[in-house]
Length: 136
Image (tube, rainbow, N blue to C red; front, side, top):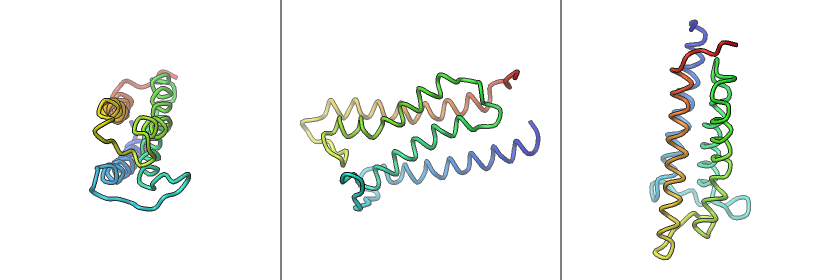
């Protein structure tokens, strides 16, 4: 890997980490509430979180030397991240993605879906970064 590739990797990973830290801070309940409602009354914090998931997933498509590797996994992860917000709203029953005592089983499903999606992004990035180069 050349010096230019290392600089691209470093910059891209730092940008991704910044995006995910901001998204995580917004996403943690009661840490930071963004009361601005846009687009069908969906809170801005939920949209930022969804955009963060999608951008992290899209990052895997543009990583240096990863064009053909793990193609199916990239598309599956992209679909999971695109549908994160609609699935979250469906499971919680409201646009604020707030769960109550009546929806505990839905909250468990949502937590598994959300954690699986987030961890999958990091695993795929690590696999793309440290697996062998493509022979193309």
